[in-house]
Figure 1 (cartoon, helix red, strand yellow):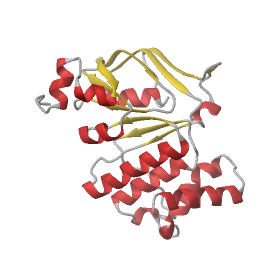
Figure 2 (figure 1 turned 180 degrees about the horizontal axis):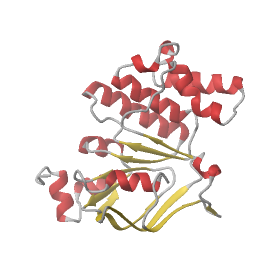
Figure 3 (figure 1 turned 60 degrees about the vertical axis):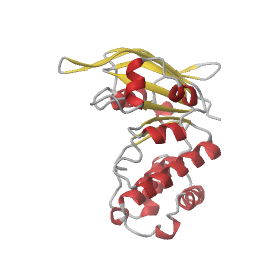
Length: 243
């Protein structure tokens, strides 16, 4: 199981004077899948990027910790967390070289790189396309490659921003199965943004509902969807909220 836990405390963020996040606090338990949901423009992706240390809050703190220590914001910490974007940001090189990219940056020896990449590409069903240019993959295959590129790094915390955006039901199902396999095999802490309520129900150990820049509801996945405590959350998950 991931050794890293993550706590956000009183996070505030504005862009050009517009408040995007206001006083957001949450404890992301280790080894769990946490799904962030909410209306468009509610601040979900901003919250994810700040938690992943890609942006800094105007106020508040992001704290990575295990049972014994707090980790500094430095290169060693960055190597233990990974974010997969909606469009995987693939390079104009082969599928294999894309998957190996992060490992080579870390100067992992060639034999270990080849083993890790083969395992990851087989896990996502792309080993047979390892010599194909990554930019020729379908959208669904490209997202599978982006996940493989994250898997080879074996991160303690894996951030997923709309991992099935624009995918058809078949590819969505494939990506969800890969995410479930990542959790079983590597046991990272997973923090994911999605607009798909059915997906949230299938994958979430816990749910965070963000509304107008604030975390207004949340809890264990099954309990949240059965009985949200906030009326806005109830309207959102039942399709009554227009946004």
